[in-house]
Length: 391
Ligand code: ADP
Ligand code: MG
Image 1 (tube, rainbow, N blue to C red):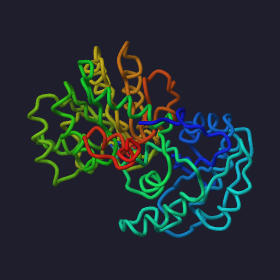
Image 2 (image 1 turned 180 degrees about the vertical axis):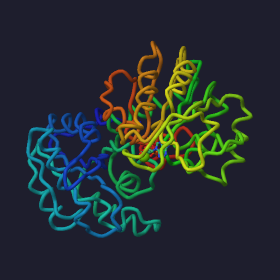
Image 3 (image 1 turned 90 degrees about the vertical axis):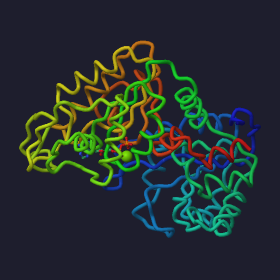
């Protein structure tokens, strides 16, 4: 895969696909991790005299302009972080975008509006996507993809545009691929995977793919209740995927799965709800498990001790609410504290949890910016955005 370093960019218009899909509240960015992560490539290109045109998506607008999903707050934050003006076009490939790009001088940067304001971006129809990609490609001489979080999508700004311009990967994509290769090709053992979070259905496919290759699989978060149910325990009103119970029972037969022994059980999904630590096999019918308990943290930490490779995806509890954050904190500390191990954190919310809990990101080998994309890579799926960069 060619990297941005290999491109001669001075005086060229470089279209950069960045992952700037950050959480917003009341028009301000609440976690700028992804914007910060995008800086090294932008600074490198600008420093080498490129005219940088950034394309990105935010949220899920329905293929038409929607002010709720404008990249304006992102442009403002990017401008602060870069310490230089960031022009913002009012459209993606229209007159405003063309004018903006035309006005860029060497070493200047502009941001196109949310690429998902155009139906062609995510269209399943190759012709419609291609037509949008043609217009996008006409804005630049070169294309660099630094949006690892989107490489599993066959979208115009990720896939089709790379077929139309000389292309390369940015440092985020290159680093992700390097780390994920180390997880999939002959990982140092013992290899432990920690899974949590709430997208239970999606993640069972990952378990299926990873289980044969790992030594230990620790399951917490909203995931664990379907497993506890598979062991025959009642889980009260906790998150449960009834139709996946049999599948989880099958995974348990591997003998590699470690489950929580206690959970923080609350009367409601709220920070101020009454809550107690209860045994994982005795969750009261009117309670929901919102975090793994302190004994589980000890059990998980012991299971992780000595691991040489760890992949962690998904918070252990509803870390956004203070009473249910300790499980995630405990497991994050256990992973971060491993000596000489390759430790990888994947998943948007997991990465946000590390930052929100104030754990130094440098204590992990790598924090992935792309949740779904890393999981699909580990599942062994073909990722269109990577395949096209390799061609
Ligand atoms: P990631 O983005 O890291 O892949 P997910 O998106 O799958 O993770 O899940 C993150 C969410 O899971 C968080 O918002 C967290 O509050 C939620 N979560 C964790 N544990 C539980 C639980 N026991 N019940 C409900 N939600 C949970
Ligand atoms: Mg998530």
